[in-house]
Length: 360
Image (cartoon, rainbow, N blue to C red; front, top):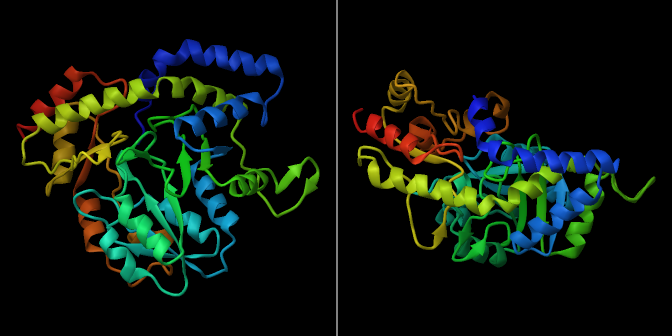
């Protein structure tokens, strides 16, 4: 459950700028695909070192539209990690494609490049990676596999705004799909998303698909969707983007406190110099996760589980992913716990969490 009080606190610093942005949009009278969206698209493309950014309604739509623009034959296969949030898999199903789940690396929680190649068949058309918790996937071998088999590469960057791999931004290795859900490091005050790319023709397709398949008003060239980033939310995102480094630095500092302060009884995230992690989530793993969560709550410390049920065990996936066993994914989902690491949390807040946890 979202902690709405903390979500409010995490945004309070930006309230005055939000109000100015809202007033500007209100007074403009232009509420759909206006200057606020155009400005944010340019800003976020530049931030992410992409040539193009197309704002859409949410992160799921960003993934759906990426696959739709690629126009794969119905029943084609898309490789995806087995421990992602279900939205990643839903985007594949919504395009009448088949998700092929591949286990993660237990150390990073991201898809294991060593297991990808064995999952490729003649029907495989794409690899959809997820940069989970704010850590980039191990992209060099993944990019090499995609090139070897001529596969499209789609990056679910919902949790990785500003994360890098060997100095290169997530979302720049393939087609980048972003979510701006309020809890994200770069979150708006509602739903929002974007597709980033260096491919001009691909960006043009996304722009048409998000707007009823239309490039010119009332003239529809393809079957499209209504999936447009709102002007109001785009304005808020432009405000937040100016503070994203500050948000990231703050969260990285809190993560370092956890990393250095928590006992080794807790399995902590792997830190490696090749990866610049932005810590959308700071998770630990523990065999007595549920007891730990209850213990922390009794000490007035709220935590979250990302995620309690792996995709292949969700009711919605009955008849879709039946008969598959993913023990690594199941192990992660049964032991992971996300600790407080919001922009509103202070060093003293985190130190208290550490002290309480070390007594568990």
